[in-house]
Amino acid sequence: MGQPMAKLPDDLYIPPDALQVFLEAFEGPLDLLLYLIKRNNMDILNIKVAVITEQYMQYVELMESGQFELAAEYLVMAATLAEIKSRMLLPRVSEDEDEEEDPRAELIRRLQEYERFKKAAEDIDQLPRMTRDLHEANAAPPNLEQDRPHPAVDLKEIMLAMGEVLRRSEMYVNHQVEQEALSTRERMSEVLSMLTSERFTPFVALFRLEEGKLGVVVTFMAVMELIKESLIELIQNEPFGPIHVKARID
Image (tube, rainbow, N blue to C red; front, side, top):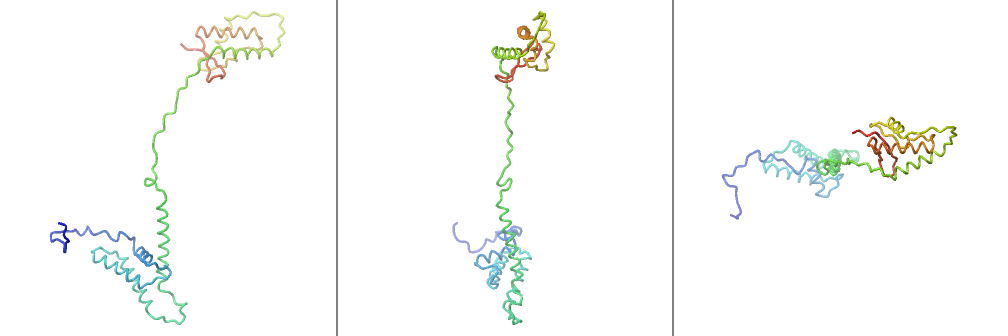
């Protein structure tokens, strides 16, 4: 009802297993010692053992009064601190103080080593970690396949290709005693025999330059007739690109 409670209720039951959480703020006796040294602004190389031991024992007694289960290593460290404290209070046997080993040396060495490993672990923990700071992307890529229709072959493109063949045919000089008549129908058959439905043939490959302009014209007329009769088709992969021919399959 908002009033302070002087004692625990008689019917309050706390299971023993509920108090099994042990010193969750520290990872061990060295971690606790390092915390006490930093809290008192001490140099790790010049520890005031009496002060640290007193505070360490207060913390241990606090945990014991709270019915926390103390690990054996904490009790061992308490005994070690008590031993070091007693050795520091005893008078030195040797007159040469520099030759006598400091009873704190082993503890200081362990604390320095622990501090290095703890700092390294903290630095590693700051690194980006998969599933904590980084997440792997698994999005499916878009379908980039596109059907590109072939451009329609314009009559101007055919005439340009025809003009190129005529210019090349003028490079051949023929001396003919007797001129053989060329048949458009026969040339249509020859052109069809050169073509298949599976393979593309360059348009300029249908012409025989050695026949001169007359042979080029007859071949061109034969090609036009075959296109008219839907026996062949012209293909151009890109605008202003080379023209190819293949037989048409109905």
